[in-house]
Length: 148
Ligand SMILES: [Zn+2]
Image (tube, rainbow, N blue to C red; front, side):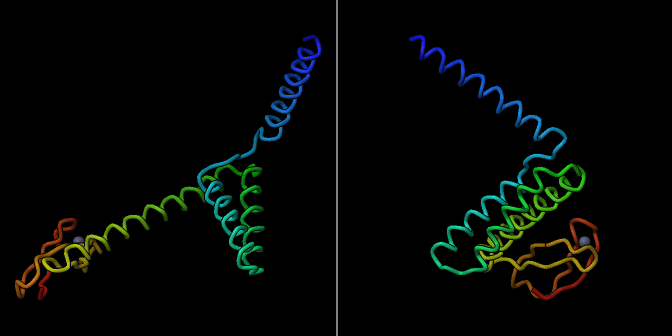
């Protein structure tokens, strides 16, 4: 019983020490964000793929991803790291929007045509098979004529 209590005490002291050390290590450092998670997961996948395929460049990608992810966590430049993260998030967002757009386009392929406004680039959906029609952009109100 005494011995168990002693071990518990030592464990708690050790835990406290590790917590303090970790806290000091990351004080003033950027730490992790979504980009860190993406980098670490992607490099782990590269590692697994490298084990199976024995392709050396996958192993290199693994090291690069790991190093980059860990380096970002210890960076003191919060503004730059947060900017990188935002860029990655907006790319993911754009990719998702594009995927949704392609799915809709495929779903509506019989009844609708998708056009791009020549003035502002907004995507517009118009009914198919109506001949020449005037299209008014719903975002910038520019009008143009198209055969659909
Ligand atoms: Zn427009």
